[in-house]
Length: 406
Image (cartoon, rainbow, N blue to C red):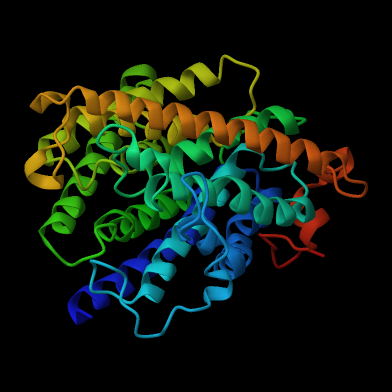
């Protein structure tokens, strides 16, 4: 056991957990004031529900031996994992690997909630969390990181920290959710609290250093490089989105800059252990432009993906996964990309994108369809509850209470 690696991975795990409250504030600032608590609770409760699912059976399904499609139940309840067992080839305790991976499982379904805020039943969401992590997240994590089939395609799909497992997975699930839940009764309102949005983006940016620079599972040069390219891509995408909003409207939007930063962080996630700083610049620039364009195009459709989950996480994740196959440097991550003459890696990345997106979309549709048919559940709140706001109707609380309020 290596004490330096262990100390860093404990820190990285805590940083990744902080991302979920960061997401809660980022999303919470974008909705109406009467739905702030509801939106924040979607993320916060994931920390509770998914933590339990993960230690009981989620980790086993994702990282148990099983088959190339899904793990088995050999680690149910984390049985047979000794406190001093070392995860192979890492120098860190296996239980620390369980913890680190748990934080990824927590934030992924929370990302989806941006598509159905202000109208989704909280009680149904609790059950959705359990089922989605079990049926969608765990198998995809197994495909990429747990010895599943995507590791055997070509030289193996490259996903250092979750471009496919987290972002494409959540992005396509968000599209499915937005379609099945339907439009809000009055969509298109402006964010109620821009400082919350910027605060949330800042916490995400900070926590993302654990997300990416921890995914090498070591305190070494590869993780240092991951830290650097993560910051570079986020900065580049934030500036790109901000300049595009300046060009379009004559003003630089704070929400736009914050969204651009998140888009850059999403896109660099799969590539962070494989590309150099110039690749990080290119990926950030592409993310800023592509995700900005995706938000604009989505607004021309009838899809009410309320907080642009697909435009940022779906498109950003797709671009990042493919860009990994373009800009990967063999001297950094051991695998060359298209620029270094290995065009086949791009094909492998595209297969991973299509497989992950298709499975996530179809499986999420099925899960939501079944939940909608269960008596007493359903997906949407009643019209009067939506008009009143989910803070009061679902939680009996208000986010903002003045001195003279009743």
